[in-house]
Image (cartoon, rainbow, N blue to C red):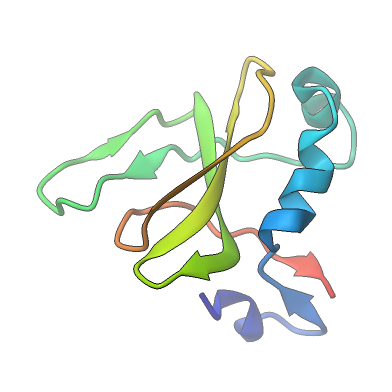
Length: 101
């Protein structure tokens, strides 16, 4: 979860509350504005024999908020469905999105 430390400057992985602030916006608006330049990279299941799924249809991004082996993540559909939050095992393959501190 320290991926953003490799970026120059003061960057951090967004917390659950950072994403919740964005989730109040309409998904279409979020995608259409400069607020969110989303890459819909899909996900990689924790079973390494599985392939990536939902490429170019959904984006899954980790948050910095965790609960032991679980962490919150957020998902946004390319068709503009709301940004929603869930939690899952940290062994899942989701994208990381860094924001300014």
